[in-house]
Amino acid sequence: MTKSLATRYRNLPVKHKLRLVVMVTVGAALVLACGAVLAYDQIAARESMRNDLSVLAEIFSANSTAALSFNDRAAAEELLSTLGAKQSVTGGFLYTPDGKLFARYDRTLQPGQSAAPVLTTDGSWFEATRLLSFKSIMLNGQKIGVVGLESDLEELTVRFRRFAAIILAILLGASLLALLLSSKLQSIILKPIGHLALVARTVSLKKTTPYER
Image (cartoon, rainbow, N blue to C red; front, side):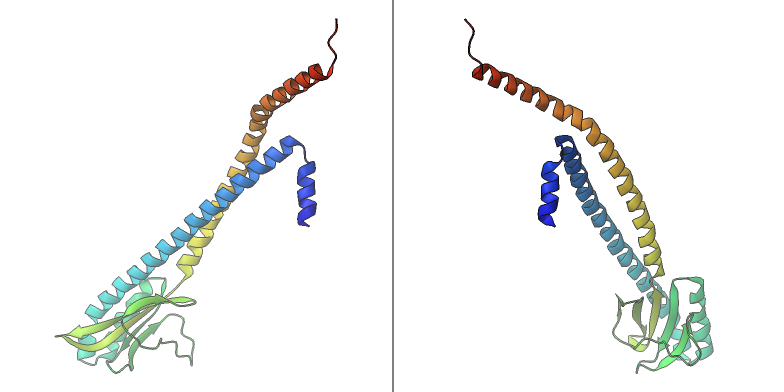
């Protein structure tokens, strides 16, 4: 297969070879550049999303002390219910210091399911289909509970699709422009080469033709 492609390339006219080289070079450069930009955008978006959820966890940690101190589950659940205002957040959970679930808000919970994430150390990290953030709730230097927030990754998915569509449009436009430019470059590059070939052919003929007396 490789030999067949190489043979076809060698048999192409020079102008077609030049056009192919230009298109492949421009296409490879654009794909690498756009891929790097897309990867950077996703990394930046993930980091921004993680920071936003961490800040939200800190806010709920500061506002949950009264509910946990007075063992008021109704107040805790009412506080967590305000998470419904943020579409990306799918769950909010309050735990006691020993890891027992104290109150919850779960937008995607189905009857009979228990979707609360396992309590772990403070921090934020991505899992396969969600982002989790945990923050300890402190009162007078003592840990009285932990708040955990869960967010879906729909925002990242939508952003990736939109960005990919923009990049695809750029690639198509740039490829069309490269095709047009390659046609212009052919005359600029091939004309001097053709002239040199003609001069070389003329000189060669003069050398092989006997001088007339």
